[in-house]
Length: 340
Image (cartoon, rainbow, N blue to C red; front, top):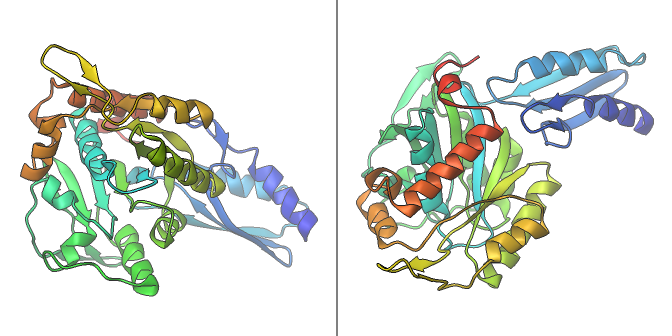
């Protein structure tokens, strides 16, 4: 059986995902592979535009002389082309702020964007987008009831914070946490999206592992600040994602510097940490976000800086990161308006 399993894996490794130029096994798209007698069973985690990969997997496995039939369970979020995670090794580095402004920048580029706030310990996305506490509505579909996401500034939003009472802690333990997160991944009626960003909790615990295992995440953006303490935690996060086969698309260095009116920059939290970790772990440095009081006030007022101050250095940097992601996945204004 071990020999047969290796034969199947080697065939699957010949199937390349064209945008990320890597095989579907290394990218973590093939999960729960098992052999029962002369049958192969597996789960295939894909985006809404990648259903042709199922045919390629079936064709590859059918060449095995001992395989009577491959059984492939396609796992996808209906209508969602790309699911990206925004993560950080520790709290307080501006991960949620980055998620909101990156979602805004992607939306302003012409893409259809959803934002899932899965940070169960600090679900601040609704406030950052100006959404007040409101009841989550549901709709009956052919596959059961689904949550209807809220909308702010053209972005579809769902947050675990919308299920809790204001100012009350979300004191959920393992089994309940797993159930809630799984529901939010599978039971939201997102409609057609180019990007679904998932704002993960900080660290590498149960919540992060559940989200990675239960969703077709095709890449992660890591957020850090320049100081060494934050970089140590980023290393752990990157190693975790690579261990489960999720590509690290790049690193965003937040709070990189403070620029005064004369254009002089002060490295408040140190210098060069993002570039150092990017080089060390072969992950591109996507952008360096400055310290800007308008980022904070924009988050407090529900008016992200990427929208309210489009000519600021911070907004232009978020736009640069959005364009880099668009190039990585070959999504531009044309593909954003005409999907396969």
